[in-house]
Amino acid sequence: MPQASTALSRFTVLDLTRVRSGPTCVRQLADWGAKVIKIEMPEGLDQGDPMGGPRMGSDFQNLHRNKRGMTLNLKDKDGVALLKKLVEKADVVVENFRPDVKTRLGIDYEALSAVNPKLVYASISGFGQDGPYAGRPGFDQIAQGMGGLMSITGLPGQGPVRVGIPIADLTAGLFAAQGIMIALLEREVSGKGQWVQTSLLQAQIFMLDFQASRWLMQGEVPKQAGNNHPTSIPTGVFKTSDGYINIAATGQRIWERCCQAFGKPEWVKDARFATGDARSKNRDVLNEGIEAVTLTNTSAHWVEALNDQGVPCGPIYKVDEVFADPQVQHLGIAKTLNGGNRGEVAYVGQPIDMSRTPSNIVTHPPAIGEHTDAVLAELGLDAATIADLRARHVV
Image (cartoon, rainbow, N blue to C red; front, side):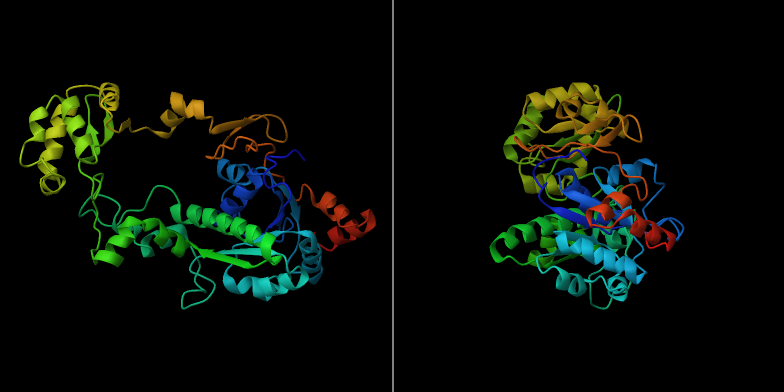
């Protein structure tokens, strides 16, 4: 199998994950070259659609590239035995079952670390591995609500609004990947593995960032601010003659340059707008004044005019416009892979550039069980043994 990168190529990862948060974590490892074996239940034994959308759909494909795949029935004692043989030589196991499931199957951290004490075992859950909510099923929007995000998203008085991406799922996966790499670095010193844990709820609360600290340090409960920044003013969405733009005139010097770009130098000395505190108190009047100006010309005009003055400003794109933007095309984040079992497909590539060990998309997601025989052969099983395992639905 071709390498996505050489950066993590010395590590083997067993992927037991489902849906989104877990696959997001493992994608980070696979895209940087880890040897990932994606383990699924044999066809006909799994119920429902645990992987998050149709297998050939864009969502599944984008989550599971750069992996090999095998089937293994972890409800069968022989399937668990095979997993433990894989664990003997693995570096990482990633799972996002409900906390009690892995213990019931006999594949929890205690059981697998007994096989390989150097194993880094990562668990992602909805609410944590223990505590009063540990047994609850986790879902991104539930975490967005419980983590406070929906209370500060949307227009003032609108009521709770979810963010348009599964941000709790995605960030939990990213934090789990970071935790795995921290554990692997620490293992180089101690020689020991450890259990890495995160949850959708923890990830969502961490992502509140300055909004959380406003409460923890100042006792201030943040509210919905719509498109206005809660503390840096004027920052928000403004209508132009042909669309909308974002302007972020944060800080006094940028505000003064913004006034010059608008042809409104008198605003700098206007008592209503002269200081940050004054602009905060009079934000509605100020926003109305700015929009009266931006309506006089196009989005392209104001993006150029404001950036020329050093004022952060940008268009507000639909997704198709994002990928048509010349800077986005220059960055090359859309990666096209030719050949294999899908032909030509465009994927969202990694947002990190490395000078010596870049990441690439080198294989489409595996068909279910595509590499089962090869992986088992690497364990030393012969063809007759593999055929017997198949006949008994162990693989």
